[in-house]
View 1: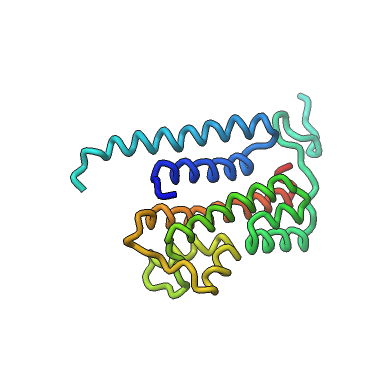
View 2: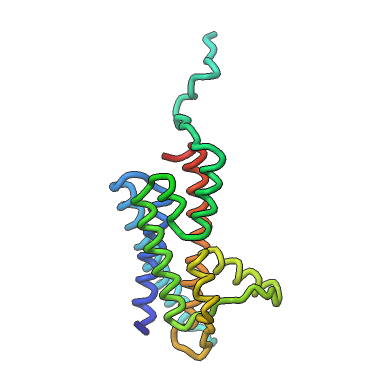
Length: 57
Length: 142
């Protein structure tokens, strides 16, 4: 498991799962919150990666 | 003008639940600090306990397995102390591998940075979990 994207996705799943169970009650609310958090983690990480792409360091 | 009784909950407010008592609150918080999810298990929240134990345990195990570094409690500078505090939040998932000499860390490893983030976040998430245990024990959350 030495792929940075896979590691980021696994991290996003685990962190989103814990945060969803802390913040929300009920299966429906937790599922919705988990999907929003997970999508935000992955999408914003890719956006941040592309924004940093032209940096010389 | 009509006045509202002090015992009636305000419109829109959360209903107040009973707390579980001081000793059980303390034991749940200490248990949660030692083993992620144990505090919720002591309060009968089995679904949360299982999710927290598996998720935080998996993060800590992945962090060590991916060549992350377990920072020792030697407080060699403020940054090292903060890194130790973050990692030690995972409780026994930090202390057992640290006592076994695991988590030396390999900065040349391809996954070193990711592994350290896994370890920091595992501990920090468990701190949030302990606060959640406290809120449940005090009757602030269902």
